[in-house]
Image 1 (cartoon, helix red, strand yellow):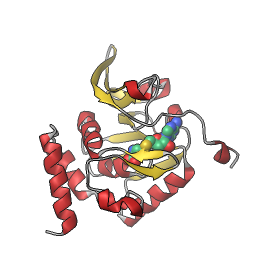
Image 2 (cartoon, rainbow, N blue to C red):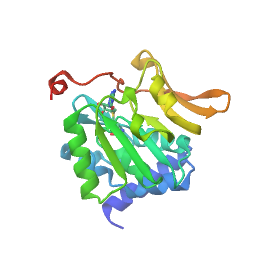
Image 3 (cartoon, rainbow, N blue to C red):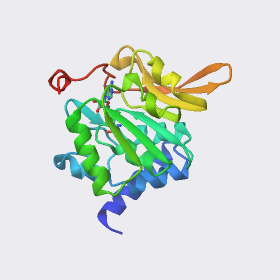
Image 4 (cartoon, helix red, strand yellow):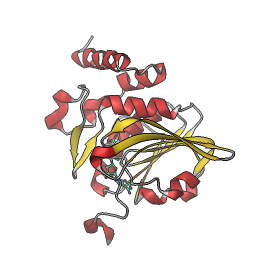
Length: 217
Ligand code: SAH
């Protein structure tokens, strides 16, 4: 085993011990090279179960949180998934192994460009990216079987709930304060939406609109 394969296997063991049991999710986490998604200075910590900075005040989520959210999403092979908050692209790369197509929106152009370069380098061809404000959803591509939001909103944006297909699942951190966020899983049923909490989390905020520098471009 290469040193990277050893680190990957160790991380997967840790995820199992923490209660992640979906074998498809664990296999995806073992195979997507997380070291390519973090800044070079953090490459040696890439396989540790920690969140890391990716620039622009943003972070790549802790592997356990990525695994938990992906497992909660119950992604099927033929599904169309929307992600809000591409960041470094790691979560999208995990999803891309599990579903038919991932649509992902990011409001920082530089992060999105870097993520796109990683998808190309890894020959991942089923991710479509969009630069913009994810709180508005992606009407041209809706409905989505699954929606994952990787930044915390005070309340769930209506367009995202509207773009969820019947029977669909949305997973998102929600909370007013950074210290007071919970991970929600929302199912769209015939009569409306059923929401359950999956526990406390800590995410960067979901920010409506575009960063000022980029807004005029
Ligand atoms: N899924 C990412 C996590 C990145 S952190 C990963 O695997 O690395 C959350 C990301 O959400 C940040 O990059 C941030 O810029 C982005 N974000 C915040 N508000 C947004 C919005 N309204 N629309 C699109 N992206 C947003």
